[in-house]
Image (cartoon, rainbow, N blue to C red):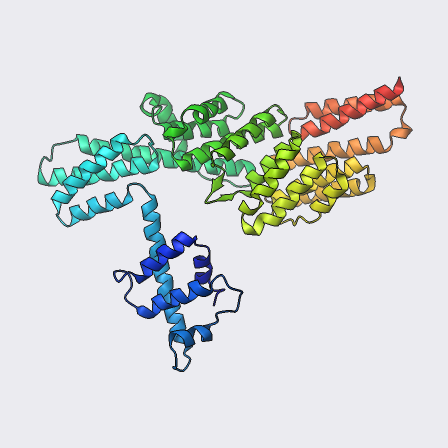
Length: 489
């Protein structure tokens, strides 16, 4: 019984929310069925006990002592309790939105012709909106619904020629739509860049053209300006002014953004730096690391107490590559339990392997990486790339060439990678194979010829437009070339 979906949902509630749910179930307004409340108490008593402590027959005996067992009665009680749980989550969600209850009160008062309540509550809500510095989607949608009710109330009972309220209704509806349209286009455009996905962004081009021609109307609305800037950074990535504007927002205007918008702004700023790093601009590494540490301090990397496995990976990778070994190890251990439970082991083992690699503890790195399961494309790509570098460091040419070929076939056959991603990885593997072969057969070259071959390879890598982890290939080519040149003197 503890393995039912309902029991698992209740188990995930915090102690405070378990108590609130119990109060909800015991409220006669929501529930007048005594046995349903007793079932909840029974579940709460046993939910954290070992599996099998409370089966259906045991529950029935405690709920209906002395009666012959009827499984259907247990099913019915579970069904009643599940419906109450769903209502409870809806009420809790409503309370998280700062204006939702007031809007429902106003709209209910309008529908029931209780106009004194409507007038009183609308004045209070208007005052709160005037004082609100955060103009996000909730703000615009609340303004739209407020003016919708007031406009039709006034038009029906007072002055049908009054236009100001209706104009505010339309303006706020437009702003709500623009924020939502831009926000979703930002997330889905980023998804299209990272994964092999495509979306039809209806009306987006028309919207952007409208905004450009009427920019003074929108630039003072921080939410709209922010998501517009983010979208431009995705569509016009070669222009750094969009990223600089995002940095300015992070530094100066976070108090004008909601928590969700703050997280989005950090997330897209991180991703911009990551794209720049992946295309060879290594100077963005330190900047990205500083952004992450700032985000951790402000709590914007945690959502409901959990950190994304990809943020965890990016932070650990940066810390290790910047030789912040002590800080990185503390971070890995401190935030391990804050990862999604089903991802903890994979994320921890991969990032521990990466830390060991950067500390030049190559055998320890291999031991950790072999524990990583390839649950998705990202883990496969990241782990294999790190294995390639580890074999390279260990000078295990046979294992390295075998892995290069296996990885090349995987990339070619993978349907979830974009064409550009495939080209970036196949270019890397082609250059990596040439580098490995050169170093393996170094003894067959004169020192001068080996230096020339390595320098030539570095020039080709530098000139190639799309090479994943180009900076690593260049570093290895040049360091090997310098060794060859030094040996020849």
